[in-house]
Image 1: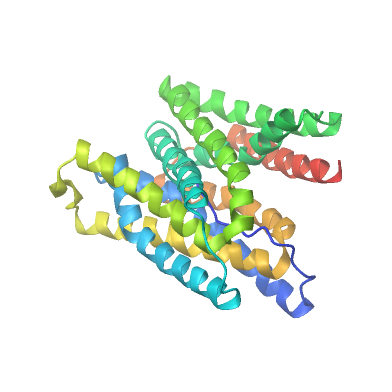
Image 2: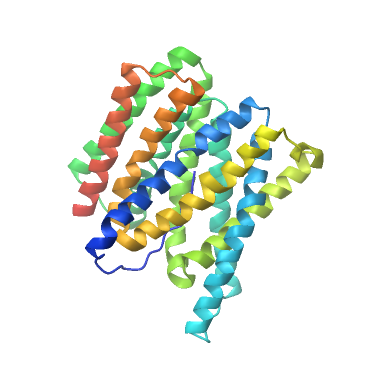
Length: 316
């Protein structure tokens, strides 16, 4: 799950000339994120396993994030010569990145071996719900009835799709759904833990450290479980590896961050709701996944529930 690095600074009201462009960039970024499940599914069809795909993703994406992170660090140093990142903060960023960019991604990629790209994307959409529930548990605060109703509405929608897919694909749907639900939960923990670190060191530097740490872990796992020759893939598979590292990871990360800077996090979150719609369209047209009235009903319930959940929680 991915992980889209965002800034936490308060932004000024965007100029009207930037609003349309900000929405367009945010929508395009969300659409690019939505390609992840499709690309992974295609890679699996090509015989490229989860760990190999994750490794290629890191080989391609980490150097880019590292360069941007270094530029972010030098920019901060230029503005404030006394700016430093403590070893403790760096270790925390590495640990949090391991949760968001390794654990969550690994569970998500693994889950796609068992469930459709459509169900995967909709389950991942519930991550903000986990953020609110975990925060409420930590702060010992109660949720309003409207918020709870929106939460239940979303999960009923997921249940509709789950039972339909269960009838079509059997017990594998249970395994895949549990894995992806674990990914959504892990990403929620990542978001909560990442915020104070982003405030301290900035989004660019934090993301660089977080991605690099996750990259080291997945490459270490690859070295223990695979041969170096396993990185040799077909020409089409290599194109898919380039796509997962750039189109599905680097490009949308910075597009979402740019959109947040132009129109703010709230509007960006709203426009990002096109992500599952894009995934559904691509899954049907490219992967030939089934799409029935039950899938349409469930997807609509999930999206409406999450949008209402976010709105009610913001008002509470």
